Length: 216
Image (cartoon, rainbow, N blue to C red; front, side, top):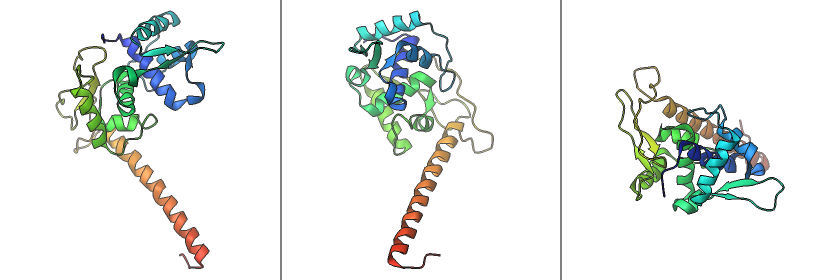
C-alpha cells in the first residue's frame, strides 16, 4: 500500500474516531467528515480542509479499500475498512487513529487518548500492540528517539511515510520529569479506581442491610 497523504490520514483517523464516539451518526456524511477533519480539539495540527479536498482524500482512500461509500441513504455516507485492509486488530486501529489525529505520543498518552476508542488495561498492553505494529512488514509505527530530558519515548505512525523526529513536548514541571501525558493517564486511572471503590462500598452497604448487619 502506498503512503497516505496527511489529509487522507486525517480523514481515516476521523472515521475511526467517530465510529466509536458518535455511533448514532456513523457512517459519516461529507459535512460531518469535513467538520471532524477541521475540529479544533484533539487534533494536531489543526487544519482547514475544504469539501473538495476531503472528497479527493476520500477517493484516494477508496482506491486503497480503506474507505467505503454507503448505499441506500439519501445522503452519501462514508465508513472505514482500516482493520481489514491493513490486517490489524481493533486495538491497533485505535492506536493508529489517535496517532493520525494527534501526532506522536508516549504510550501513556496513547492509553489516555484512546480511552473512548478502546480501553487498554495498562500501558504495557499499549506497548505490546505498538511493538506489533512496528514489527509488521512494512512497519506501521515507530518508536522515536527519546528527547533530552524526556522520561518516555514517543511513538509515531508510518502510514504517511518516514517521520521527521521533531522535539518532544516539555515534561511537566518538577524534578521527577514525569511527562504531562503520563501524569494525566495516572490521574485517569486513579479516578477509575475511585469510582470502582465507591461502587463496591455501596454494594457492601446494601448487602449488610439485607442481612441485618450494622454497617458503620
